[in-house]
Length: 131
Image 1 (tube, rainbow, N blue to C red):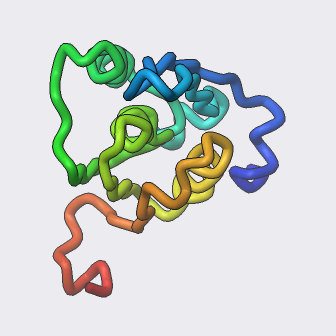
Image 2 (image 1 turned 180 degrees about the horizontal axis):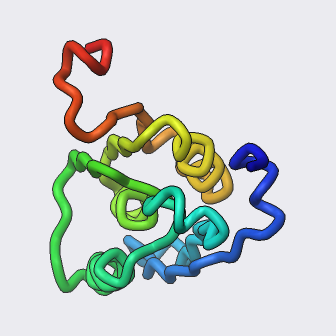
């Protein structure tokens, strides 16, 4: 199978409107690449319905988000990037294969300075993960 970054050509986008944080700011639209071709191999290559709902609730301020956010199994980064767009400092984690997708989505939305992207395999202890 081709590398993940080469598969972006077949990727689709999910969009999320983030209202302005203050009167002197503009509304922001996040565009998150998803890759349905990888969905059978990597569950993190798509945005799940629960993520869509949580992202919308964050954007509409129906739930609050803290100053620091840790997203485990971030996949596309949809929810974590929404939190970053709302001003949180965010750590996005996932399996090694999905890190390029996370990095690309952060960069595409000019949020690379607001997020830290780290490898974390479910079931690993901190010593296993190199921490």
